[in-house]
Image (tube, rainbow, N blue to C red; front, side, top):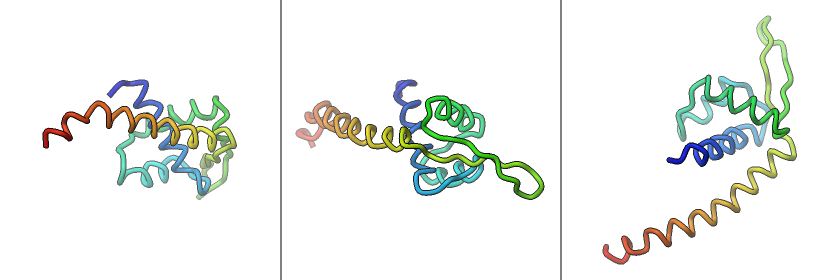
Length: 106
C-alpha cells in the first residue's frame, strides 16, 4: 500500500478511536487491535502529528502517581473523519471500476 495513503488512513483510525471519548495511548492501541495492529512508536508519532495539525488536544491527568496523557478530538479532527468518509466513497468507486472485469469473469 502506498505509504502516504496508509499514513492518512492510520491518522483517521486514531481519530476514530478517540471520537466518542478521550483516551490514552495504551487504550487506543487496545481498542484498535481487533481492526489494525499499531505499535506504540507508530501511535505516538501519529498522535504528535495530529496534535500539531490541531486535530486533537492533549491533557495530563495523574493516574496511579504518574501522569497519563489523554487525547481529545477537536472540531478539526471530527472534520477530518467526515472528509475521509467522503474520500472513501470515491476510492470505492475507483475500486469498483478497476475490478469490474474481475466481477464480469466470475
